[in-house]
Amino acid sequence: MVLVSLVLTAVLLISAGGLGLLLLVPLVWLCGVVGHAERHRVVALSGRRVDPPARRVQPLWRRLLFDQHAWRSTAYLVLHAMWGAVTGWLMLIGLSQTLLVLGAPLLGGRLPDGGYSLFGWLRIEGTTQIATAWTIALVALLVMPLLAHLVTSVDVMLARWLLGRDERKVVEHLSARVDTLSESRREAVDSVEAERRRIERDLHDGPQQRMVSIAMTLGMAKEAIHRDPDAAAQLVDEAHRSAKEAIVEMRHVARGIVPPILADRGLEAALPALAARAAVPVSVEVRDVGRLDPTTEAIAYFVVSEALTNVAKHSGAQHAEVVVTADGEQLTATVTDDGVGGADPARGTGLTGLRQRVTAVDGTLDVTSPEGGPTALTATLPLRTGRSLR
Image 1 (cartoon, rainbow, N blue to C red):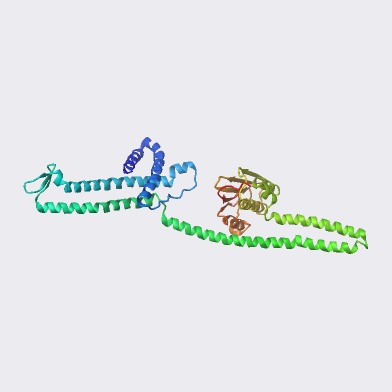
Image 2: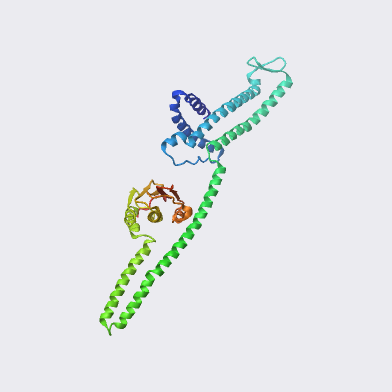
């Protein structure tokens, strides 16, 4: 592997100028591949796991030119080549000299004073020199495995530093993620409680009052049915109308939970129906989304619904656009309008509640709304492994 590193380092140096720059991108990519193999070698040597650096989602051209893993692998291979060449040469010289000294009685010729001569230039003369040389050689032979282990340890540390993840940053990132998730879970509980109170209030103020009125009307009709059949019939008709109005109100309350069209047909049918009821003209584009798990569909629907409500109330827009896409790992819903802009989540306008809904499932909500417009709201929701094709 040191030889491979030396070859790649030499080619990289040659490619650093002139037309060789054209080879730089494929060579850096090749270094990334070799770095991947190096991680497995380090794991086999040390038994310690080396996780690759986290990759960012970015366009192909940026991955080719600025891929962190490939450039870190390139730096590792250059340092590994220099370290391996120097330490390998020193270890080879030390081991060969040690073996020559220890093998002198077998390989060399005897001198008149009892010493040895190897190849005519290495002479060990006298008992003192022989004892000293053998002592040094034996010590070197015993120390050599320790030196080899030290060299390997430095190589492993170099690999973990450049080919692996920064453990400190990983811990900091995980700590931040734990804090974020804890906060989002708390906000989710608050959101559920607020939703429960809303449903309770809507039922109390609407359908429940209707039902009380219907019961009273039917009671009066029951009392008047023998005395004044025509008046009783009018009261029954009034109760019938109130019952139908109560059904409509119940549907409105239920729509605030899960619209039937969303549960039955998914986002591709529910979002155009939602846009048709909006106060401003809305164009909708849903690209190859299909059926998703109910939670993701519901959150995406209510994000779009609340965003369109904000457009109608606050933006002064003449037109809005909804675009929903899915790439297998995440769902992205974007709502843009041509209004006056200036939307700020810190001022409320429903954006705080939307952010709580989205972060509760580990999603993100981004709002771009300069003064004068346009406003773009983008919600990104993670998709569960395997789509729920109901």
